[in-house]
Each structure stands twice: as structure tokens, then as C-alpha cells.
Image 1 (tube, rainbow, N blue to C red):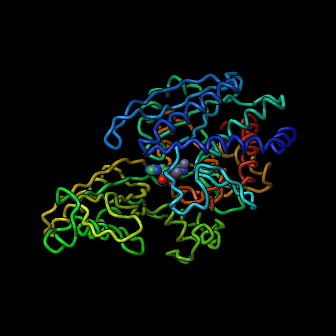
Image 2 (image 1 turned 90 degrees about the horizontal axis):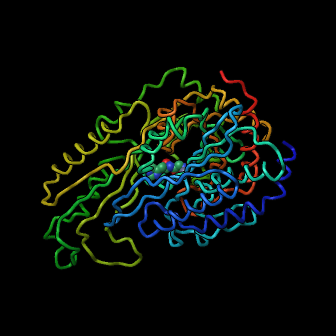
Image 3 (image 1 turned 30 degrees about the horizontal axis):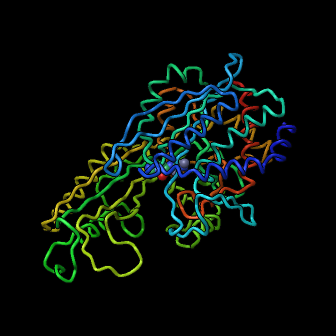
Length: 473
Ligand SMILES: NCC(=O)N[C@@H](Cc1c[nH]cn1)C(=O)O
Ligand SMILES: [Zn+2]
Ligand SMILES: [Zn+2]
């Protein structure tokens, strides 16, 4: 692998330039305005894959109602690189859409202009989640080609542009293609999460699910002057804020009856896992940028990230949020919150419990306004076993590139398609992150460290190499 590693080192500036190009494509899947950019990002990947000699298939998953319009869903990009029957075939999944980002959120520079700082941090929306990792796979193929090394595996790619918005349309494509496009797949690898800390790589075998809710309170036909109408009408925002405070307490305890009853019991065997993991609370504080954690011990913090559900309040649409002092009574604010779900929670049951509870709490208010609550999208939790040869190969690759054994982790975030791959293809799925715990995905000043980006490309190459060698059991 030395030739490969040296080539990657020497060409890293070129890879960073490519990352700059794609961070500049504003592929924000949640926004109708940015839908053409999201589609363009999918097309960029198709062109790049074809330039590398892959055969591609552009799948149109259909349309979507978004912000009052019918818009096309971004394409699912399928690609095949190598069809040698004597080699294993690995399916690589990634997403090319990103979370929204505005300079006014607090970014130190334009979020869609990749900027490298003096610490080698490559800052930009999607740098870590998930454009850096997606690009990394393509750089890996190019490095094998340019060094004249034989790529020791066949690769299938599946890149989507809706991951940050519920992966709409993707499950159907995977289930349809399971016995067709994906029929020769031996294992799956996803690079779309983060190390537990900032220095040691990990392999990940579990994710929480996510159920995203919207809670609308409607009253007057339009926003009102609070001087003229304040004190004389039931204010929707007052009802909504009351309801939102009834969902979760300040210590993160979910207040919706029945939710915790579904959570799998903690066994002695599982407890043991947490004792062996080195998790530095200072690292967590570094990522938080504060010392506001709820629990004192690493075990409790990890358990509450990985194996217990959480409920987060995200925002209120239709309410005044700009600087200044507008005196308005919003007519129809919509609260946003999500529940990270864990084994053995059932998404339909979660939705039923949330909706019944919100409606019963609203009734207690005696308000003349109307309430509506719905689940926008739900992805299931996933936990697998890290003993499969796919993990063994990845662990060896980590040792080759980083000189240490990887942490074995679960993750608090969600990649809903993971379980779909496992169930539809009946193959092992491995999460092999490129980014570090302080990358700030979804936040302001998201970054990937140049080191992680470059070593990540080497890791991908070493993983292909180890996959070819590892015995299937
Ligand atoms: N890197 C994975 C990731 O960020 N996943 C999102 C998925 C999601 C679901 N709804 C909105 N986003 C996550 O928030 O975990
Ligand atoms: Zn992601
Ligand atoms: Zn994300």
C-alpha cells in the first residue's frame, strides 16, 4: 500500500480543491429553492463516476410536495466499478445533500465556500457530512488507477440526495434493486458518522432512529397587532410553547407516557461494554464548546447518546425570530421536534403516543385554537454485530493507517437506510467514519480536518485491500 499512500499524500491539494468545488454546490435537500442545486450535485457525481470509468444509473425516485410546490426528488446515483467475479463486491453508500446553513447562523465565513484555517481545518457545509467522505471514495478509485494498482474489489455505489430530509424515495429503490442492481453485493460500507473523540478512529455498529414531528397551533386568520388584540384572544404561540415544554424536561427526561416503556432493558453484558470504552469528557466539552453536559460519568453520557431515546426541540416556524422587537401575535406557529429512537421502539407506536399525548395536553388548556401534530418522517434504529469479516477487514485497515485498534462504537445520530440495506440485501453493514467528534456536523463552522480527509482516503484504500484478503465466515 506504500505506493498508494504516497500518491494520496502528494495529491491531497487536488482532493481539497475538488471538495471546495462540491461544497460550493448548495445541495440543501430541505429547501425547494435549492432543489436544482441538489440535483446538480447528483449530476456532478454521475459525471465524476463516469470520468473514472464507472457505469452509472440515474434513478429518479419521483416528486415531492415541498413549500407548497411539487418538486422532483434528487436522483439516486447508482454506479458499478469492476465486475470481476473472482473479487468481492462492496456496496458504498453516501449522501450528497446537506443541512441548511446561513452566514447569519454564526458561521465565521460563507458556509458554501470551503475555507482552510491555520489548523488545517477544512470548513464548509457538508465538508464532513457527507461530501468529504463521499468524495473520498472517488479519490480512492482515482489513486488506484493513477498508481497502476489493481483495485482488489468490485464496487457498487449508491449515493442519495435526500438523507437529511428523511431519505424520501430511497427505500423503494433499494428494495426494488436488491435482487437486480445490488444482487452481487457481499457487504456494505457507509462513511457518514464520526469518531468518538478527536484522535482515535472507530468502527460503528449501531445507530439511533429518528422520528421528526411538527406541531401546529392555529387561531386567528392572520398575524395580529399585540397591542390591539393582546389579552383578548387565545394566542397560538402561547399554546404552542406550553405544549413544547410538556414534551421534555430540562434534564432530557421525555415526558410522553409510554415512550420509555418500549426501550430494551439494559443487560449486565451490555453494561460491560461501556466500561471498556475510553471516552474523554473533555473531548465532549470541546465539541459542545461548553461544560453543560447532563451526566457526570462517561458511561451515562454514552448510554444516553447510544441506547436511550432523546427528544430535542428544534425550532418554531412562522414565529418572529429576527433581531429587533416586533410586536406581533403569530397566527400559526409550527413547532419542530424529533425523538431519537432506540431498540425496541416502534415508529408507529411512537407516533401514536406523541399525537395522543399532545392532543390530550392541548385539551387541558381549554383554548379555542386548533392543534395538529404529525410525524414528517421516521427512520428506525439499527444495531448489528461488529464480529463480521467486514468489520475485521476494516479494523485491520485502521491498524495499517493509524497504527492502533479502532474503538467499537454505536452512534446517537441516524442513517435510516442502514437497516434497509441490511434487511433488503441480507448483508453485513459497517459504518466506517472519516470525521472526528468535533466536526460540528449540522452546526455552524462544520469542518473536516485535512488529516482526517487524507488519512480517510488511505483508510478506504486499505479497507479495500483487507476486504480482498479477509476470510468470509
Ligand atoms: N450523518 C447522518 C445524519 O446526519 N443523519 C441525520 C438524518 C436525519 C433525519 N432527519 C433529518 N436528518 C441525523 O439527523 O441524524
Ligand atoms: Zn450524514
Ligand atoms: Zn447529517
